[in-house]
Amino acid sequence: MDWTTLEVAGRVTAMRQGLAAGVTDDGNAFVVPLRLPHPEPTTYDGLLLDSFGVLGVARGEQTWLTGRGADGRLHLWSAYVDGSMFVPHSLDSVDAMWAAPVSDGASGRVVTSHLEGGSWRLRAFDRESAVLGGPPLGQELVLGAAPHEALTYGPADHGPLVVAGAIGESGAASAWALASVDTGPGRTPGAEWRRVHLLPAPTELSSVAAGADGRHTWVAGHVDGRLTAYAVLPLPFRGPVRSATVSLPPVDVVTGSGRPVVLVDGVPGPLPWFVVATARGHRLCWHNGAEWKAHPVPGGRLRGASYHDGSVHVWIDDTVHSAPDPV
Image: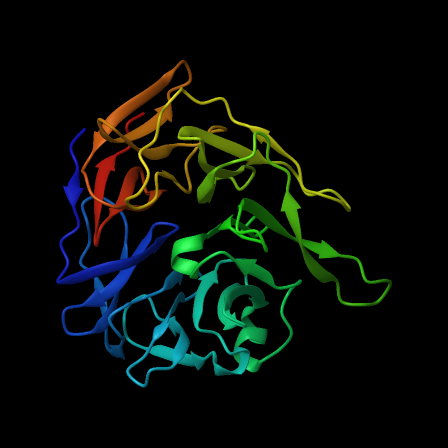
């Protein structure tokens, strides 16, 4: 199984659900649907971004992007797939300093973060509320660091929106699911963040992903350097959200450079696939129905992974490496 590197005149700065996005050397946003062979990137001429590039990308009837424009303001853009047009939506009304779109059917959601009293705070919005300054969904969550360092999130297409990382007043590793709340007959349902019960308690959480059928949501990280993953169980009517530990091969992860483990989103089957940083290099791991298998992955800072259109795509440093389905 050979890896093919995505060729683009720029940097990949976001990847999710089979889409890679980033900023060209000229400062314009681009999006690439991930498949093999790699297609040409769609560049949105005039959608100028700062050096951080695209902060988040999500699928929909149009492609949704977030980032800071040439005016220095944070925007949510709806961009046509053919590159013919893009429409900016300012996020000034929710005082966001960071934001990422999350696919969720026709409505869509946006997770945002802002600084308050010296700490980063996380909020979730319906897409329309984020643009118009409406109320958030659920309570604010405190982050232990800036969102690009402390937070991982996904998905909301078929299951709950789940966030994980250094979350909460203590900054310890935890996961939270956004659950609907019944507010009474004839009233619009509310929402609240519920903590996911994880045992054993993780040292670090670095990835959230869902399977292709939307029936499985996983959270992964490590416990004292040993790879671990949890399956998020269906949300209860009330109380904490439960999880089940996924049986994985014993792998010691390497920390300190990028994410020690990233789950591959959109994979077929009941078990997660993952890319893990080990002392012998990065490895893509999957279960073939009988046993766990592993294959070397190019080196660099691990940032994300996705399964789409019959191939696996791993975001490393500022580019994407792709390989055919190993199964």
